[in-house]
Image (cartoon, rainbow, N blue to C red; front, side, top):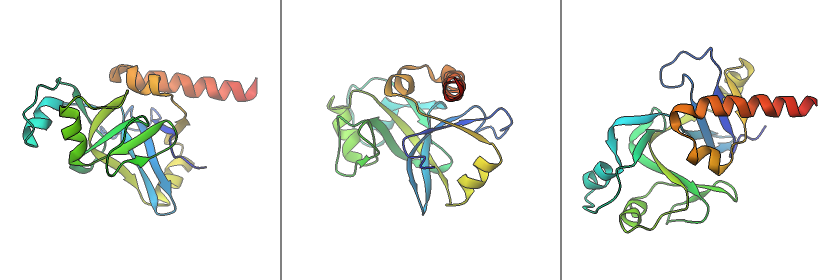
Amino acid sequence: MDLTAKCLVARPEITDPLFKQSVIFIYEHTSRGTAGVILNKPLTNTNSRELCLHRGYDAPVPQEPIYSGGPVNTRGIVMLHTGDWNASNTLLVNDTFSVTSDDMMLYRYTQGDTARYYRFYAGVSVWHPQQIVMEQKRNHWLTVDLDCATIFETDARNLWEVAVGHSAQATMDRFI
C-alpha cells in the first residue's frame, strides 16, 4: 500500500515516548524508504519567533509552536503546508500537501508570505524500506486519510483521539 499523504496513527501498545499516541503524516514512501513528520508533538522549548531569531531573521512574527517531527535531523526544520505555496525545494506530496525545508521559507514567513495552512517541524521520522512494512505487520500503526482542516485545525493534544476516530469510522464504512 502506498502510504504517501496518509497518516500513521500509533496503536495504544506503542510505549516509546516519542511515538506514543503519535499521528505521523507520511510525505514520502518509495522503494528507498518512508519519511514523515509527527503532527501532534509540540516542542515546549521553542517557537517560530525564536526559530527565526536563531536563523538571523529579526521580524515581528507570531510565536507559533514548533513540533517535533521525529528523531532524525532534529536541527533541521521542515514545513508541512498546503499546496497553494511553494519555495525553491518544495516537495509536492499530492494536490493538497507539500513539504519545504529551505531557509527561503523562513525568510518568506518573516515577510508574511505563507501557505493557507502550515506548521513547522524540527526533525523528521524515517524508516528503511522494509521497516515500515514490518511495523505494519506487527500492527503498530493504523493508517488513515486526514484532510487539511483536521491536520491543521485540530488541537495537537486531541489529534490522536480524532485520528483514531477517523480510522474507526473508515473501518466501519468498509463493512456497512
